[in-house]
Amino acid sequence: MSKLTLLFTAIFLLSGCSKAPETATVELPKAVKFQRVSESTGSIYREISGQIRSAEQSSLSFRVNGVLQAIYVSKGDLVVTGQPLAQLDDSDFTVALNKTQASLGSSRASAKAANDQLQRATRLPEGVISLAELEQLGNNAEAALQQVKVIEADLARSKLELQRTILRSPFDGQITAVSVDNFSKVSNGQEVIELIDGDAYEVEVLLPESMIGNIDYQQAVSVTVSALQDKMFAGEVSEIGSRVENGNAFPVTIRLNKSSDKLRNGMSGSVKFTVNNSRVAAYLVPLTALDFTHSMAGEGSQDALLYVINEQTMVLEQRNVKVGHIRANNIEVYTGINENEAIVVAGIPFLRDGMAVTLWQVK
Image (cartoon, rainbow, N blue to C red; front, side, top):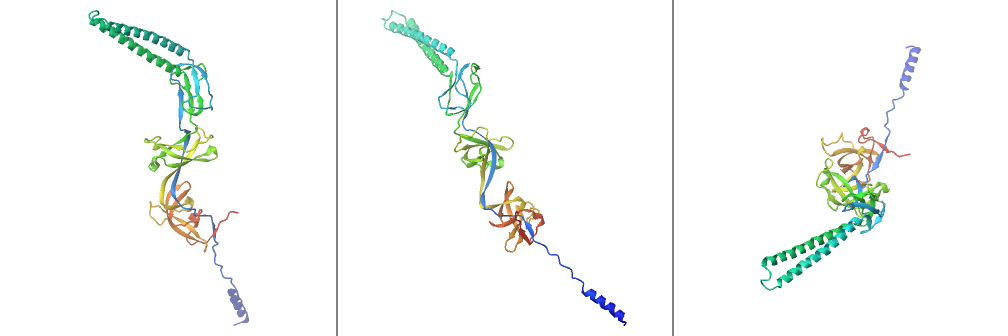
């Protein structure tokens, strides 16, 4: 073999030995967004919005016809029981009363005269007056007495009608509306003033039929009023409707235990009901933490998957959990996790069991 051949052979062998080996691909830990499992709860809550109103509200009206002579109050005024609020012109009623009183006096005089005549006739010797005449005198006396009673009833009615020309407050409260003007004609039953009891308020809500079976009389609830910087009031269920309104909803009334001078008719209130007291503790977990498509359970089950971070090894543990009711953006989880464990709450479709991760921190 020539020297040239040996030289090329050596170069070829050296070049083959110096080729760099391929580098294996290493997967870096994935940063994941997480949340710690919150304190467990065994209660299910539902919040339903309703409208606040006075528990005692009255549309006041006169019980007689007349012309309005005076209004003594304005919208917003506070009044007490028995306080005069408005008055009709009472001149016609006064005349009617005086006329009835005069008629009563005349009628009583006639009745006395008829009775005196009867008494004199009964004292006469037998045979002086016939039995028919005596009976007629008795009838006259009785008719005169009945006439007195009729006019006495008319007098009582006239006095009552005169009293009714003054509209008085039936309870302590606040004027919310005055519907008429002075010197206008007012009819019996026409609304004149609206009055509310400012010390007692209630909220009426419509509950779906799925909830109504879990609501009881005197059940404690809380009412949040957004117009008062989300101030919360304690209350209780005072009325439960027995007839459906607006589709499949039942009316339910909440009576507030305490009032506030800042509450007003028409404000919105959010009523928080406890609709179930479960003996099984549940954890609230974001819906985004669960995978319902690859559950180990069959279709229609209440199972789902989520990922728990093993903070010692920093790898993911895939767990099958049993879920319950949805509450806003969260869902109840009954089994498979423990309080204070870190669970992944985003990017679930891109994770797998045993994946190395790091905790994503907000910078």
